[in-house]
Length: 147
Length: 122
Image 1 (tube, rainbow over the protein chains, first blue to last red):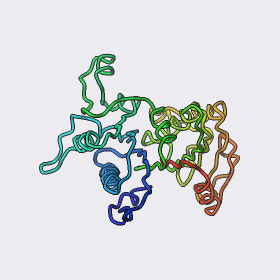
Image 2: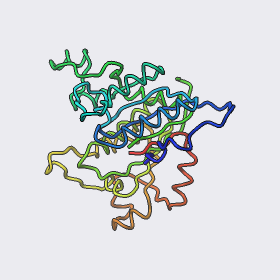
Image 3: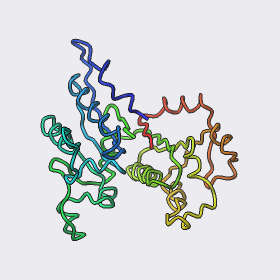
Image 4: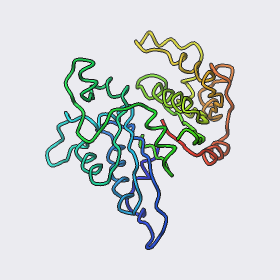
């Protein structure tokens, strides 16, 4: 519903504007979905305009962004690697919903041990509960859904 | 965080089965309610079908949503809105729904979206 919010044009902060907002993003679409790219583009635009992205919460099919197992098409960067790089540079929490993730084979060391599977979570992401999303909603000035 | 309280409006627009998003949106509603937040749900378009009585999804190897829907009032999630136009389009009456719901016109939906702190789309 909010893909339109991810247009980079027109989002620049006015010069000398004191307004800096904190955003929390909810990403629902899988790796083949425009919602992943829109969320990345929005994040870059918001950071470029002097805003802060506190946390990106990957839910439902969105958790596939946190899989280190995806092999991107030639000449493209994997979504997971793009998020990891952004998060490391700008202190963004990348949180993958635990329930959504284990259903789809995205596992950190703890879940991999628990279910006797391989670790598949991309570095820079963490697996946690929906409470992390609710908390982000409470801490952020604005929340956006990339569905 | 414990003292913070915001109003959440979850907009559910997907048909109940075929993907997990309907169920997952209800998980978000229950989690926010667990954190003592004010939560309302708005069912729009095919999302209204999530509320239909007597669903039998076992025939397509799915679990019914009714247990989660029935849990909503137990978590003090009692504000359920439905898009009036969708009810009409789908040929449904409020009495066809598993929970008491308030029908909203398009203008009233816009008012509710403006009135809530957090609006999430599923």
